[in-house]
Image 1 (cartoon, rainbow, N blue to C red):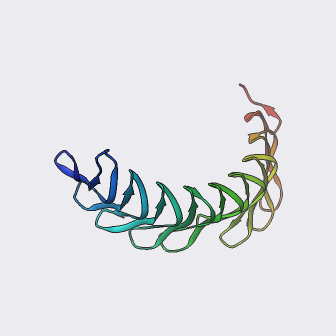
Image 2: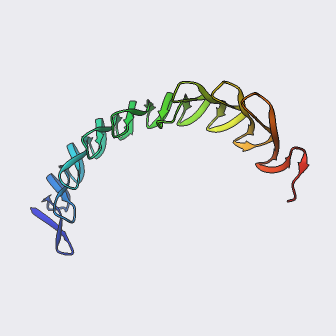
Image 3: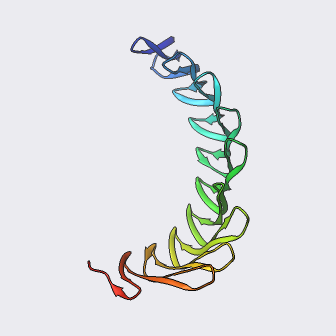
Length: 223
């Protein structure tokens, strides 16, 4: 049975519904201005086959395939200028394999792998100012992570354990001199944090306990 769904006298969706009330066959969903929002098919109320989603104005936003109501295979997202935003693969509704994300000018801003929907292995992120690279284990940062400036000089390095900062973190000036020495335990700031100028001269020290400043250059802070 052909069906049209309205809201405030505007068409939201058009397609077929069987006698049990389940969506079947081809459907189109609309924005409130009447332009297509999504097109695809249903089988027994679940999305199936190729689907396409749109920005207003019939510009493709994302496209891919569903199997039994879950994303499966390659999915591609796009900016409204047509540039690819993200490309990744799904298996039974979960990300699997390599995922790559781009900015609107086509430059890579994130790349890595998924296993059963969780980030796994080496990932790289680039926000245009810094490039961060390191490992994920079960969707959490783990091991040594390094961040580089746009000119490839080292900006920072430190260790993560199950997504939390652990131990010493170092931040650097552009000339390679240490800028900050930081200390963490389970993501909490602890101990003496030291700050240096570009010649390596100590500027000041902040002492933390359980993420709270206790002293500055040895002078205890009032709590």
